[in-house]
Image 1 (cartoon, rainbow, N blue to C red):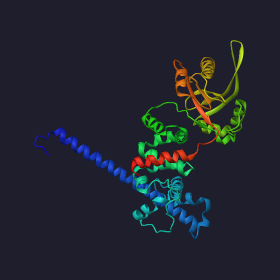
Image 2: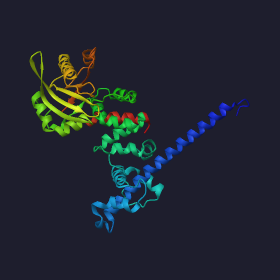
Image 3: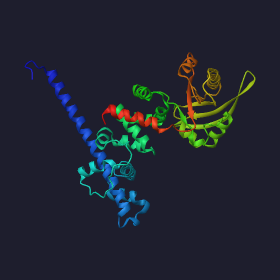
Image 4: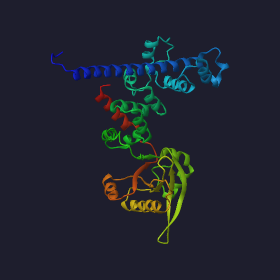
Length: 357
């Protein structure tokens, strides 16, 4: 240590070492809790399969377990997540067994496909809160995609949740340059804004993408699957009207779909198109949003939002068409089927190589 050290330097040095130690301690605790949760899931599943008195508890097992343990944080909700964690992530079994000396029943074999996050990488980089967000995804490769990108981009739990809700996996799958899309998502992770998916995926409609689908057929299919459509739109959407009739200059016009978002406190006007984006379509949507702003907004409402859904779009034309418009307008594409996984798998393999995992 230098002879001319000053008091401020002394204080800063102690603060820095304390901060580093605190961060390391928190990281160690988080990792231990993740391993603990897998072990809890292990014991629950083993009991459900082998317990001699398991029939006595049946579906009330986890609730009864909560009552018996009676410790803060030990509840049936956690137990459900732990059980799911054990089932979906068998590859970390050996790591957990070394930590807690679990008996090996041969349940901890590595999953058969190549897209698996290594146990040490998973546990040291993702908290259980991150893992819990990812576990809601049914597809194994999609889970792996978000694990990889979350580790690479160092996403917070909130940002991971946002990327899942806005379907980054699908958007990367159809993007010609997924690496640029990922970079854009990383750069914009701290920007608070209205989040509109692009693209929307309407595979639940059961329509054939190779056949011509009219706008009225698409609208009817969305109404027939309204619940799925609202889930695809996101949180807070409430259906208001279909083919909403309005009068402008003594002429009738009909808005395809009108929703109200209780979180944004505004109407959301949706226009459906069965072909690629045209700038005149945006003018029509802008007129509808302007009408709603002037004639339909209730006290306390925010200005309405317009969404134009089309099959394809050119980014430059959308940029020029939106230029100078005051209303909040969005142009999104939709797909009638999910993209092929092969392109994403190749992209992820390159990501893993770049990350050295």
